[in-house]
Length: 333
Ligand code: SF4
Image (cartoon, rainbow, N blue to C red; front, side):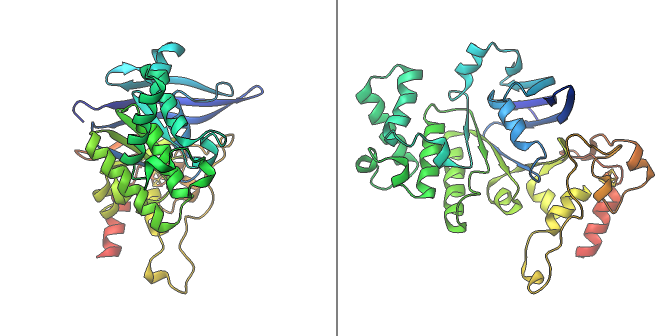
């Protein structure tokens, strides 16, 4: 990828529990192009949110610890910044939207003041100017009757409107990169689509990069151009999303695609990936997916696969990606 905005290179994160060191993210590399959307996919516990927190500089240390690698934003390694310098990046260069807006917002402060605070702290704006800018931001995220609702408290808004307020706060300082961690999981399907459309619209208007963390392939397909599939703390497949959905290469991605509910499953059990993701303290030898993989061979049980080039812009960490991909295509033919 030429001139990416964000490059994560060989990132390692571990948790310490007493004397034990538990690897949460291992040798993770990916990048996000300027003005594009990357969907980061995978089951709970695969390392998506921990990676996002490391990029945002809000990893709880301890118990977490970054063991190696680089997080380059516009060529600057964020991991080399002092805490004071990192605080200047937070909000202004990178911002984050969380799943649960109600707990992320202050319940006893009117929403306009929560947004205005950012302009006051980071831009030194006076109270009146900061509140005017905050109301403009509420309008930008399409909160109806924004000027009249500005002094309402978070509990007076619906779940979808609260998520819009979170997005307004995240975008107030015009970050280059927005990380959205499961931003629609707590919302019903109609509101989910509205929030995704809003994120896509704002991303294009502002030429911002978006890292969308989700376990939902339908959500990813809605707005992302690229996809990164994670499993057990590592990248297992990276590809343009249209290609990933059409011709998945990694058996885990094939399993995820197979578990999307469709009309053909009516009245039948939904296919699932057998077994569970490995515990941090109990990672299998070789390929971390081998206990759940029907393509597994002795090689998989002993040797961890590295990223292999599937095509010019795709990689998969699998010894047998070609057989898996061919079988998937033959089944769909
Ligand atoms: Fe399955 Fe082997 Fe590929 Fe791992 S390396 S996903 S076990 S086929």
